[in-house]
Each structure stands twice: as C-alpha cells, then as structure tokens.
Length: 578
Image (tube, rainbow, N blue to C red; front, side, top):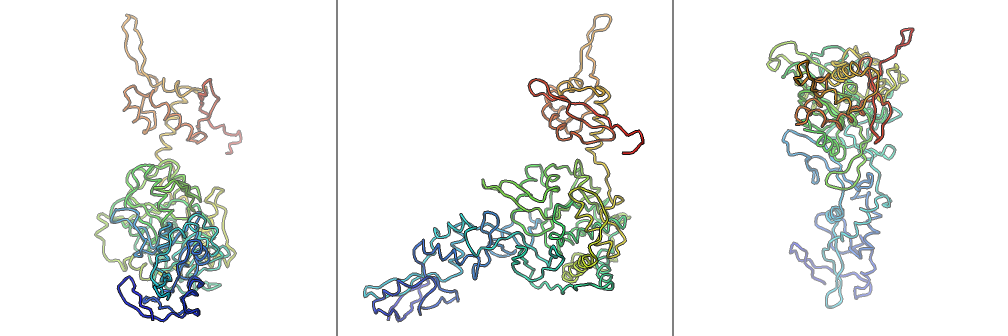
C-alpha cells in the first residue's frame, strides 16, 4: 500500500497495480489513463501530465471537443463565450447604466487556455517512493503546451470556426429556421438561448390565420405608442425583424432613429424592446468625439454578441464620419484596443439612437430610418391607463413574440419572397426584404417610406449649399485654389480721394463658411488663412456632392500639387428630364 497526500491535506491509500511490481509500467501510461488510481473528488476526468511536447499533442486532439467544446477559433484567435455572470464576462465600461448584452466573445491567452485545462481536468503526475512504488500526485498543466494552440488555432483539428453568435432562433439563407441550441456547422453560428427561453416551432407553411395573429400580437405590443404615421410603426417592426434577417439579407443596415418632440414620450422604452427580444448593447451616452466613437464601435463588435446596439439620448446634431462609414460596410477593421493586432469584424448589428427632436448631419441623413412617436400632450411622462409595460411584457412573452416575427419571415419565404424595387444602393436588398415581409403580412405601413423621414436634408447640407452659392457668386465657374478662396475672406486696405487709408471687408464674410470651419477661423489669431488644410479636406470629402444645383469639382493642379477647384452648376437636359 502507498500513502500520498493531496494539496488539500487529505491522505489517501492505494494499491499500485503496475504489472512489473516495480511501478515502471506507469511510465507507459498515456494522458487520461489513471489505471485504477483514485479519481478526483469533484468528478473531473483524470489527465496525466507528461512532457510539454506530449501535452501539446494531447491538447491538439482535445481542444474544441468534450470538456473543451466551449472554445472556438475566430480569425487568428482562440475564443470562448462567457454568458453574463460567468467567469470571464467583464463589462466594457464603468458606466452603471451601460449594458453589454447576454454574452461576450473573449480571446483566450496562453495562460487562460492552460488554466481552463487545469480546472476542467484532474491533472496529476506519477511519482515513485523510495521503495520504487508509484502513486499519483496533483500537477500543473504546462502553460508552454498551450502556446501552439494560441499561435496556430487553424492547426487544431477539432477547434470549430465561429462566425457569430445568436441568442434567438434565426432563419438561414434558405428560409429554414436554425432553432437547435449549440453550434451549427453549416452556418458556423453558435445559438446561445437565454435560460428558460422557449420558442414554439415555426410552421413550415404558416396559414393566413397564423400570420394575421402574429401581426396582431406584434402591433398590440406597441399600441400605446402614438406613431406619427403608419410608416413609422412599420419602421419599428422592421427594426424588430432585422436581427433575424442576418443570414437572409446580410448587412449593412441603416441607422434606426427613434425620436419624439419632448422628454417622457417613451423613446427609450420603445428602443428597449428590440434589445429585450434579441439581446443587445446599451450605451447611455454617445461617444464624445470621433476617436472615442471608433474605440466604442471596435470594442462592441469585437467583444459583445447582442445584435442590437442602442445609443441613448442623443442631443444636438449627431455628426460622425466614423459612424457614417460603419453604416455602409459589412466589415469593420481597426486595431484591437490595447494591442497591435489588426481586427476584422463582421458588422451585422442593428444600430439605434434615441433623442428628443433628433437631428443628424452629413451623410447620416441618408443612412437613417426614422421612427417618430408623438404623445400629443404636455407632460407625457404623467400619462396613465396603459394596459401593459411594453418592456416587461416583451421580457415575459419573449418566446411568443419571437415566434410571431419568425412566422412573418417564414410566410414571406413561402410566398416566394415578393419585393418591390426600392433602389440600387447597399441597403436596397435589406429594405426590399423587410418591406416585403411586412407588406405580405398585411402591415398598413411601408418600411423606410419617405413620409416617415423627419429629415430630408441635414444641417450640413444646408450649410454646404449656402457655401457653394457664395463661392459661385464670387468666382462663377472659373477655377480657384483654397488660398485664393480664403483671400476673399481677408479685409483689404483702400485709399479714398483724400489719401486716407481704410480697411474694407473682403467680398466674403466668415458666416459664409460652414459652421465648423467658421468657428475654427474665428479662434485663429490670423483669421481664415490658418484653416487652409481643413478647408482642403472639407472640399475633397464633398467633391461631387450636390447641394441644390451646385457641386464642386477638381479643375486641375498647379506646381507643388496645389489643387484648383471650380463650382459646376447642374446642366438640365433641354427636355426637362433628370
């Protein structure tokens, strides 16, 4: 009999069963073969620790399967997906109200992979006593054995590729419903439903009665919100559908703006419904500048899994070239925060904003779907008489509401996916599909209808037009450089008939500049001449962008690569067509 002691001080006795009587046979045992030695009291399977090279081969065969099935390969990373409350789920911000959604995708480090093995298995090694008898003792899994998996996840044969995570059943590209929890090899999606979520199987061919009941239930959910038009309501239901359409109509998707004329109207409550149904990210404030906007987008796309992202309580005019660029791309590329590694993420999220009297500027105007509610009464937050709390109802009836949305999608698929042509830009396929689903189901509104847009032109467009008109009035259609243009804002000295010299304002005033540039020029000690570089970028970013019947074009270059510009009026055909 041999006596050995575990780390917790417990003394165990065992009989060595080595055939040779000296224990040498134990050296021939493979990892996981304990040959009669005591099992771990927590029920973990035994793992015999051998040389680092041998443990590399063991990990190569095991990672991604069995007790290590929770690890996946994403890009160049080994990752795992902790749910909220699990070890490894770490909130991305320190703001109390912010939420990161139901789960995260976290990269595994070398030490984390080794620690995962250590905790999932009873790791031991075989030692000999002075009499030559063998017995097991607890051992550490060598972290060096995890390095090949970390460096080359593509060489790990059982490590499955992860393309995305869904927290609800989701229609596949062919219209069938992926509703089995776990990893789906065909789509490479991981379905992680919330505990207790039950969604009734969707009929293969929903009947008209089932479709009508599904639409009725979805509209009843928001019946206490006073949408300005039926199209605004359709836009909201289109937002509810979009997270389910990621395989049928891949991104990008427009920004969804939920607005109201005054506080207390229920914007945040309405916006919470998509996050409640599908899982999502909530940010109580819009990032303060473009650099912070980029960091926030990168961390959300890299780490979180919820398909809905809400930026709450937007104030003033929301302008962001970073956000505008995000909304036109299905892929987001950036440097991972705190690392030199390059990140490439799929941008399949539905981005939402809320605010009072929402206004967006620049290219965001044309990349936004508007959903406006108006309670049409003072102090709307004091209203009573509601039948339900929409967010609480959505949470308690989540399975029923998801089933209703899936019935609408499946019905549209079975009808042959009818659509009407809605444009040719990158959003057209998505808009046509969402509009087709709602119209086929009998919804009274039309998704992304022009009548639902609260803005047809942004403030930036107004300023751009005024700027072009001012330049055209001074130069006509002749070309000019940025330096020559800024010279028109400078005062000049003139002498009168008596020889007195006076300062005369330039032909153009600072208020003719777009606000951003005018404010910068006003702050500069030497006036507008110091904004030459900013003005040059402003023109380059808007070359060919029409404001009314005017646009700006490059008209050649001078020595030193100085660009000449000119204002070009729109030449209408003689027949009056466009």
